Image (cartoon, rainbow, N blue to C red):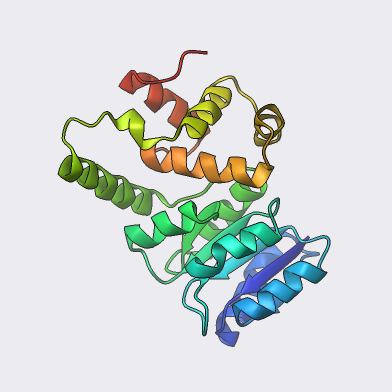
Length: 217
């Protein structure tokens, strides 16, 4: 397994490398201290499996750079590692292409659990951050328009993805069915989970059904 770690703190990178060896004893960790180094490594590394990206970086910050990194590596999962637990940062990360958000305050066990889920094709947001994010978005909906149907928080494309999720299709099959990159499907799944306040795909489908606006198969 090849993992790219983008963080400007050497001590943190060294500590995280030890954690990643618990994920895979044969892991090869590539290190970048800024976005430019990250872009070069992504461009020249063919067998990259995962990117771990800090937000607070010198020069271009991680959130700003996410879309360009996503374009360089459309099929590689990008997970944000950040000291921030602000809902707006979580939302921006997911909207810009991340498939996971791990606060640096979490334990090594929580991080390993999150990375295993992401590598299996799922999306990870810690329950406490997901709750904050859901409350924040609900508040925005109430402020903007109290009569706005919550289903409108999903785009037409995301509703199509949700429909196929309910049919049990994995991301790869959804991508083929909708003629889009698998990385794009993961972004849509992340947005769906966020809007529905769900921790996984099963919960998302169940919650959409409960709300009565699940698309008819």
